[in-house]
Amino acid sequence: MKECLQAVEEEIVRCEFCPRLVEWRNTVAREKRKAYRAEVYWGKPVPGFGDPLARVMVVGLAPGAHGSNRTGRMFTGDASGEILYRHLYRVGFSGRSSSIHREDGLQLKDVFITAVGRCVPPDNHPSPAEIKACLPYLRREMACLESLQGIVVLGRIAYDGIVSLLRETEIDLPKNDFSHGNFLQPKGSPYWVLQSYHPSRQNTQTGRLTEEMFGSVWDQVARILKVSDDK
Image (cartoon, rainbow, N blue to C red):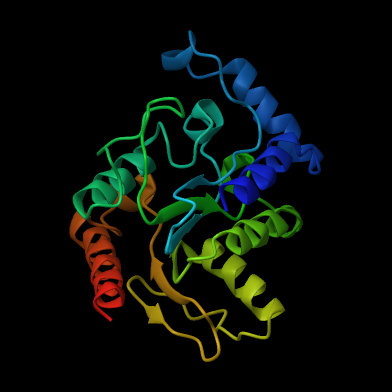
């Protein structure tokens, strides 16, 4: 499984399929944010990260301009990652409560973190065509995770991406049915799906997503895996 994921990672990092995204990720990496002027930005597509034996896949939208596009690891170096890794650590899925850089030694247990998009999009809005171009990478990561039982989708776009992939295998999910904490076990699917609002700064600062709301998602995931362990 580790070798399978490594092969997908190598292909993702080399990808230059979407001209608009290639130009933007390079521009952000070149111009940088003032606070990170001394750093060398990753400035490439960002592969998934986590435990090859993961039973849970976390799917986000796309790398942040000065988060993953800078650090080279999903949900690393920005506000979204701060809340995500804090809760992963709290329930025992992460060895650390923060994720700073791809070389910080962080290890995940039972969780693999990825996204429907691999390059930072302008204004955080990848086009439908750009998402469609990236989804095969997500499909291949899922195929590598032979122990996968469930998927936590962070936001509607991530959910719609999973809907598209599962429908390819004739597993039907309601495309427009999205609400925080909604748990789905599609008939005939090997995976359950749990929906969450994305832990973006916009959502957390406006109160749309609170610590308690996000924590409840991970408490539920931990309970599901414990039930699986007890069988």
